[in-house]
View 1 (cartoon, protein in one colour):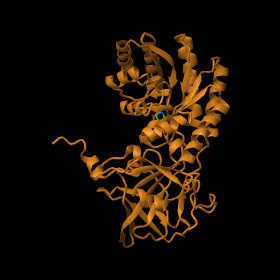
View 2 (cartoon, rainbow, N blue to C red; view 1 turned 120 degrees about the vertical axis):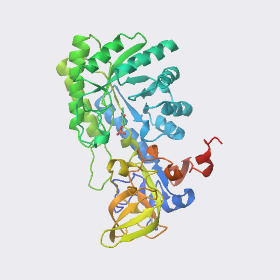
View 3 (cartoon, rainbow, N blue to C red; view 1 turned 30 degrees about the vertical axis):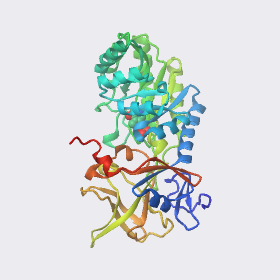
View 4 (cartoon, rainbow, N blue to C red; view 1 turned 90 degrees about the horizontal axis):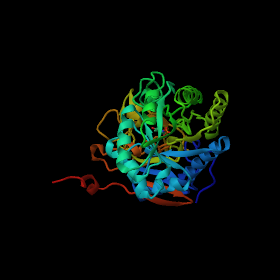
Length: 445
Ligand SMILES: *Cc1c(COP(=O)(O)O)cnc(C)c1O
């Protein structure tokens, strides 16, 4: 049904690798006509290209394995997770990074091994820590001094010794949005190296017999389009390994992680670094600093989330109302919006859009794609150049795979969208659209 991926498909570097044109000139995803998917599963619809997911998982595994043999890639679950998706990611050879008891429960129910799971978070509860210890989560990444005592208590009560990393904040600005920068001094995440808090937390870990210190972690924010913040962060981490861990405390650092935050392109003009480029800088800097400062190379783990799932996902909407404010702006509304994608309202995130029915049609006007929810700020794409869209036409927004459904809400009692995985002309439903009964399933009358 589909032609091979055409160079003429617009926005092809934002769309998944399995995107193409059908014979009729429609957008095809994984060999499925996007219009047929919209008809069968309803809109808004989230479509993930299996090939795109597989290729990104492989690209990260291979890029890091090539530069640094002792390394693992963990998928940051908060970008998007459910049970079938977890199994699929596990089959690609990735571990997981989680940030809540809920994510641990989903992974456990999915049957993936929890030894390859790293548990993050700046305020893990005693219950979550007890769950992590009991379930056998591989590493707990301690975020603050208070957590040392909480986790020690949980591990002692379970009669286990829990392996831990310590998350430090290296004082590096990753030049991303203020709501998503996490490696600077003034952030809620991690213990700062600069103030001595990191050393104090490490001493507390070493004094806790139910905790086994394995190494250090940092995460600078997201999305990070530059390579330099990773180099600066690893240099700070390396100084801490040599000067504090080794020289002052006499403790070996067996593992370290620069976190995730690798960028994807949302806009036509964006060109984020490739997995290989991130790997070269991260591994190269770590190797160079280890040699210069004379400490053994630690095991390296990285935690891509957005860059695994972002480009593989496409959101499909149906066009509805049109409002023209003469001389000011034309709004074209779709049947989704901030309930399935809060990123534009939350971060001013920007996207491109294209007609799934006529992706090759020339742009005729500049419009703002509005959502359907009761907020003026519920706008998905400002100033999009598009053909004149008709009511009922299917609109596709590329690079929709990360932090959209994961942040989805039932605002206005919206039904959360269905999710399908597509490949070779077949679509597999991995999450059905919510129904009225789902909205009321928790009510207690
Ligand atoms: C969110 C997060 C990640 C993943 O970030 P991406 O931008 O999705 O790659 C990795 N590590 C930690 C600790 C995080 O909080």
